Amino acid sequence: MAVICNTCGLPEDLCACGELAKDSTKIIIRLETRRFKKKGTMIEGLDPKLNNLETVA
Image 1 (cartoon, helix red, strand yellow):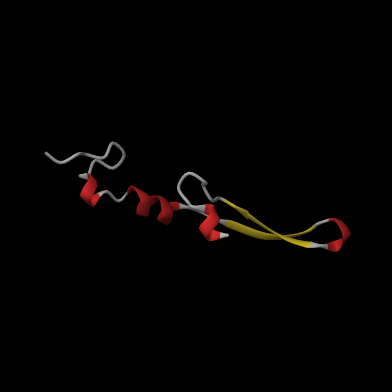
Image 2 (spheres, helix red, strand yellow):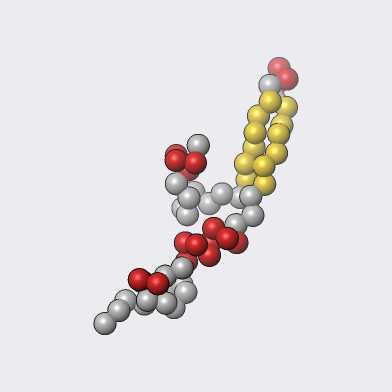
């Protein structure tokens, strides 16, 4: 018997929870000026539980 995903209700072989989370994520990227006029890129909206931030960085 196939194991059913609790989130999407599909069998785990066809589970699309990870792909749905990526499609519905809204990411905000902005440039800020910090001390001593240094530029810094701020990224908001990435969920560390769903994304492997070490590979993204």
